[in-house]
Image (cartoon, rainbow, N blue to C red):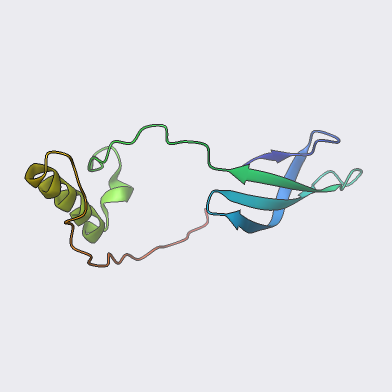
Length: 107
């Protein structure tokens, strides 16, 4: 995410952040311009969903989302629930935990 300094307009880094609410974070930023070096606080918040499809990711278009097959099982359960209840109620879904392995790699 690119943060710019409101004083000089150059890049700023996010030094740390804290949760304000489920939809808002407070960012503590520092300007990377050595002649400026201002420290600032910014807020980022959730606005809205762009598109809510609830469809399985396409393995050809999004292979990284299809690596963990346990995560894809939820889509099968949603489809079954929608077939059983035309209103699309998710109340009857089994409450089984979904486990996955997250990896963080730097390029």
